[in-house]
Amino acid sequence: MKHKPIHLIFLAAALSSGLTYGQGALAPTAKKPRTLEDYKASTLKEIVKEDPKREGLLPFRVTVIFENSARPISKTSNEALHRWAQCCAGNPDHYTKSYLREMQFVEDGTAYWLPVQDSLVADFLKELKAGEVVDLFLIRLSAPETNGKKGSVLLVERFQGAGTNSDQVKASLDWITSNLPQYTGKDLKVEIPGPCQLSIADSSNSAGVSKAVVWIPLIDLDPSKVSVEPQHGSDTWGLWLHTTPGKNSIKFMLYQGGPAEGGETNKYSLTLPVKEKAESMAEAFRRAINLCAAKPVS
Image (cartoon, rainbow, N blue to C red):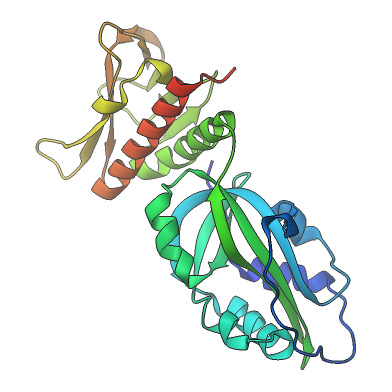
């Protein structure tokens, strides 16, 4: 599954189409400290659809998957932020000088770019890995219409690790299934046939093999043996997965039109062309293996 990116113009454009504004400008209001209880539980999808019926600032809490990607704030989001700050913020600089970059998060397979308070960017990169579940505490700013322009923007004020073990396992496996085909550059079909299991079908094989299918039980894998190694004679990298000692529970089947060969083994490797992506995928497998070992999902 390939994420469908939604740049933060999704908030300035999609949200602004349904907003209702007053005729006069709002007087600046002082920023009040918010507690965690002030943030209303919601989803990014619902926030996009919601019509707030008024200008101002609304706090929300959403649970998403961290994607470990950052970039400068988009022009559309920056303009909406500046319009709101000039009309409605007690301290405009707090907003216009604190939100300079945005980061990518995924909710139900859809990717969103959200501006993040600058002081939090380093904390995100230090504390979270791509594919981890995170709670975002954000505010929605809806600026009054100016010269025919109106819009909203979401700003991430805080974050914290989120989810039960089951949530974390699901997020981790979803991240692997979504990114593995792209990272390998192969015609892979990655599925989750059961709790803490992966099925990888590779239709890009050669040498008479039309398709190879591998079934991997993550609860039998050894996280300490997940490794990334250079492939001899090429500029690619091998991502190796091994079972714990004494287990040969990785099943495979090779096809040549019909089943040609099958069996069980204790190791399996994937070839990736970029070392950094191979290492990110290795870390995702280690996390998923450890989560499955901590509490198998039923």
